[in-house]
Length: 432
Ligand code: ACO
Image (cartoon, rainbow, N blue to C red; front, side, top):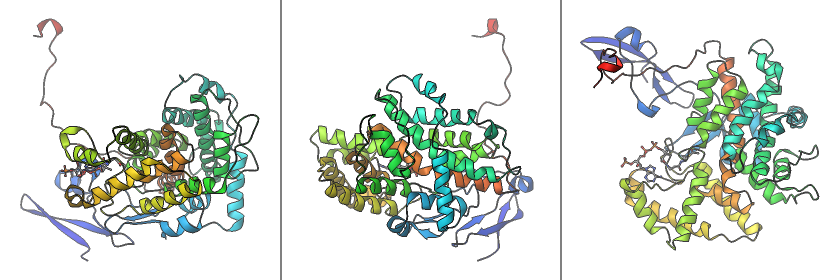
């Protein structure tokens, strides 16, 4: 592989260094292009732009490969837990027994919100979307921590361990509170005895009189969903977190911005949109065929939600794992869900249809995850919130990567202006 590429512009040759990643991915380093040639590159929606080098997650979208810190997602899904994978993603290595214990203890220590935050929950209207509450409350939580507000990277990096655990722990408490608030239910406090995922289910579903029955298969299924969402390199929300972090905003502010980016139906909101699509198909008595026809028609405003991906041009490896888990959980819980049959039929039909085949559109992680969450009793508006809880380690690791890099600069893309050329102010009375 040559070490540089040649670009000829107006008869003048320019060399661009070739960067090769540890898995052989190649990039042209164009960082000096504007200074050398006066040109920038244009790549709307960043389909072909690397915004950073990163050591966290590797994806090969053609082959359907996903690895956290080099470890295949399939191995982690089978053998690990969300909290262990979170440590791996944030700190770069699997934890020793002691490191895992210390990490878990921090979660317990910081799981309570400041009591005054309860008043903020009160002020949201009933029916407010929990993603709006989540984003607002993560940002608000930073105001209740004076040290965090004044913390500067490099001054006391050991504080980062606390803030990382605090964010992951409190996001779960905030998420459960936002659900309880939306239902008008009394808030349930976390319990010291419960581990991460069990505690979340407890805060969601226990009552003041009786603890929710924590069935191991339910806890395991939700923990798997968190783990499968834990990082996914430079997607829309992670890039947003990095963008905000690059201005040296604090960790909570950066994560709060990530929640907003995740909320949209083309990203983390897709799991909610999938269920709404399947319900609509079910209501209309369609087996999915009519919907597929509509999804292929650009004028219909329809898309097959949970299908397609910017990076995967093959089966999303997470979708394979989730599909198996979906069958497993539903059978263990003795749940039959007509939406699962519709989803399977949709998948089968789409994978045979030339429209989807030619465009390499396969099920993504969101296609089956909603059916599992439904079977666990999680309401549909909470699906993107579950995604956000799961994605927190990835956002934190990306934040850390930016802050650890002494060469890191504020992110600031350029543009090509296509508006009016020089134009002059016309006083109001002279305007026609
Ligand atoms: N249904 C129907 N057609 C689709 C779909 C879909 N789900 N996804 C892509 N296409 C079509 C596009 O219309 C386009 O067709 P064209 O070439 O004839 O114009 C072609 O496939 C390529 O798609 P793009 O829009 O260029 O793909 P892009 O990379 O910009 O978008 C995205 C990826 C947003 C995921 C898209 O596939 C989509 O909207 N899918 C549905 C929403 C979804 O499931 N999002 C979750 C993504 S995973 C995640 O964030 C966790």
